[in-house]
Image (cartoon, rainbow, N blue to C red):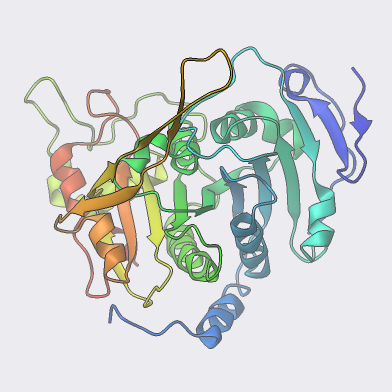
Length: 377
């Protein structure tokens, strides 16, 4: 199989071959609650971020590698001094949830051209950019199950960041979102992950969501090891002290002595993920949240057809209502706050599910709205 150049896009290789054979890639390049958001705050934070050595971030999204929110996030993280590996879909895969392509060859391409287009100084801070003809979850599976080792040997991520998505991922969006699906897939592989969304479908003002994401990444990387030590889950199920014993009542209660420490460990192990939603008119404040309740009304549009089909149906809600929920993510963004939800990666009946009483402690917040477990020194 021949690795071939693609005009304007570096190099291309069938992904099915990538994960089944060793090969040589072209040389790699090196590289309080309510506050007014100000440019000075953004620039000051960015300057502080350059001071210390940082772990690798693995980035993806569901809007496609050339989406504006993704470009803004990649550029901001890179300027803050984070070495980056981008594994993103080549095209838009919004609302694909955790869909994957089975037994289907997927082409993967180097996008080194974007480093120049986006003005990334890869000689100062490394950045490797790749696109995959697959879904957001495909990008994480390929990256974490062999792709990184083939493409950038020795690089192991500290954290996965998925986004910034154009549009909200609130409430039951968690089941449909490709952005959140990719973060959850990373968690299944034992890698800490964050999903980030801008709650408007108008990209103007998206910098607010990028800034919010930078703040969460800064806090997360302070409490994470430089390399995700549970990547690939080499030990299988660990004796963590925080797993649910369902369906028996014999839950492990060791976490009671220090719930924050166990929540942090769950995040470090990829069993807990973070979901950010920043509103268009973000006031700079935060709230630690859970999923809220929203209702998509008149979600199906019926249309006539001139083909041999009986009819056409288009899914897209005419209106969205929400029911008030204490510390709900929908409620937080309506108040102008950025919501930060701590979500279990594994479903409730899975042996790796987090004890539900411990998960409730994830709602305990500091005076400035951050999860207390994420605010430990």
